[in-house]
Image 1: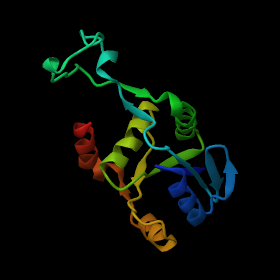
Image 2: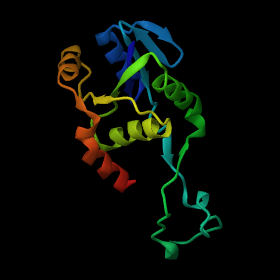
Image 3: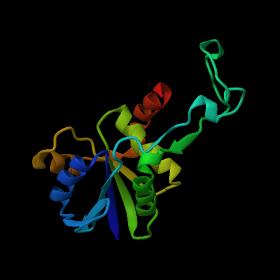
Length: 164
């Protein structure tokens, strides 16, 4: 059984890997000591553009059509990061992964970056939030010992989602 830790970028994930002992390098992740550590490389999933919705918005549109509010918001995987998204989706849904730790940046954007990937991957595994702003070993260790469930950060996600 493994715990998957998802950082926002490779540098943060490398620092976390060193602390948890995930020292075996693979393409797009590290593994070891009961952990798999990977990263999002920024925005892997984002909102689709207005012209992707139809609704008369698929032609050239103007500011007079604003606000453009679709019946439901649609997301897409960024072409340039599709390979990393596919890897994360696979890791999130692996049978050996029993829990996920969201280690994206400690802000509303970081919360959205993780949750967009988690939701698009249709993952339903339990998630804890690693809230840390420093990459020092002592700060990471302390943050790992006081994690909260993802639901404790729902309002932060809602704020980021509304902003998007």
